[in-house]
Image 1 (cartoon, helix red, strand yellow):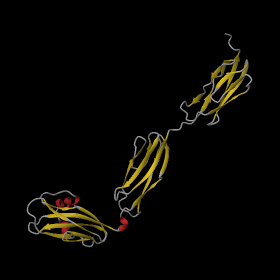
Image 2 (cartoon, one colour):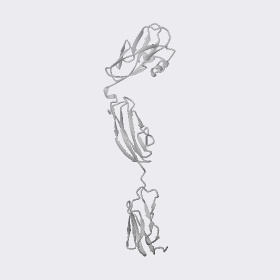
Image 3 (tube, one colour):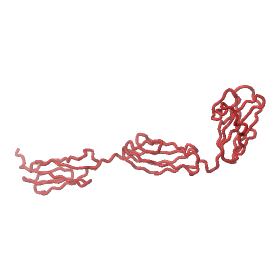
Image 4 (cartoon, helix red, strand yellow):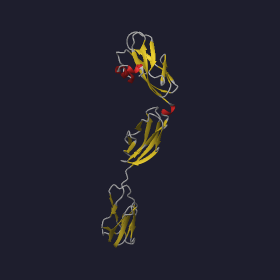
Length: 275
């Protein structure tokens, strides 16, 4: 066991970035992450008392060495760098993590980059942190407009209301981002059936608007076509408006564009009213 690993647990707690005031000195920064071969300077903060000379030690010089507070990353691993005041023996430490280049996040890919969904639907987005060997694959998610589309911490997008929003994923390490354009459509309600009154009556020269009954009532596609069996008695236009032509009876049918549902009504045309 290396000598510095025998330090009290109270000192080791300082390596997490907490000031242990009884030691009266700290290192800035309290933790380092370095690429193999790179260096960074540590500084000592004297919380009380007089400034004095400091001695530096590495708990594992095969991972990182230190000279005059300058830490040099040697090879992948984790170690502790200690500073000790020469006269009063005060101690502080810094946790040093050394990584290879392949361990660092270099970007993020998002699939898909374009998304269309209905109100109330949910779709999974997939974020891939690059490279595959990156150690820290944590990401955060955000929406440009939560009233249109929201996104959970798992990357699932929820359509809230009609409109367009941008969903962005960002890597915690490096802050790399990628975005998906999300279009939310009104929810589609499929037509199940269509109905007409059994019979209508209209006088010659007068009109009658037939209003079909759609099931469900809020069906999205209510487009229909109309047909009259005998236009010498009555006619019908594209809106369902029937015009009486001559006394008699005929049938009018309606057919839905979605599903091809049909229904029929009997049209009785009477003599024009005498004024």
